[in-house]
Structure formats: C-alpha cells, structure tokens
Length: 78
Image (cartoon, rainbow, N blue to C red; front, side, top):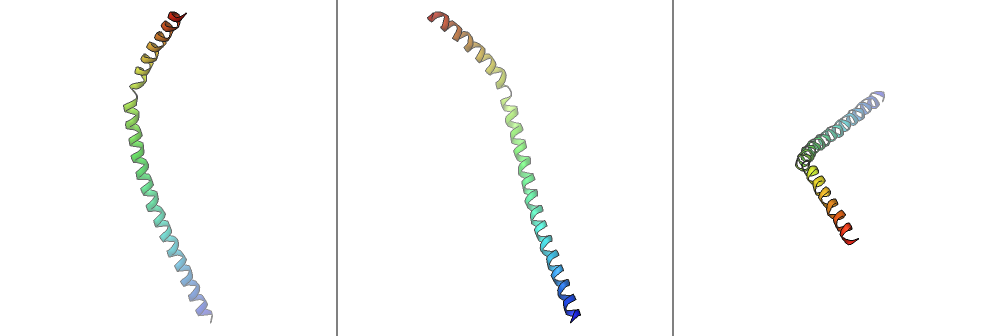
C-alpha cells in the first residue's frame, strides 16, 4: 500500500513540475514578444523625437512674430 502512495505522490509531483514548466515557458514567450514590441516602440518614439526636434526653434520664432503682431494690433486699436 505504501508503495502505491509513494508512486502516486511522485507522479503528482512530476505532473506539477511539468505544468509549472509549461506555464513558465508560456510566460517567457509572452515576455519575449513584449520586449520585442517595446523595442520597436522605443525606435518609433526616437524617430518621432528626431523629426519633431527642429519644430521647437520654428515655433519660438512664430510665437515671437505673433507677439509683435499682437502688440501692433493692440497699439493700433488704442
């Protein structure tokens, strides 16, 4: 009787280990996909940053010109 219980326990432990290993492999695959996607997003954000960076100086120039227009219009209406 003890032998049957020992064998049953060993089979259950083996099954548990196999199920846990399968879940860990599934999680590893998912995390690998997430890391790959995150890398692509990082590359995309970097590209957007490079494309948008020159706009800052242009916007400052436009804001300065609009400030002068606003001042001129204010003094013209006063």
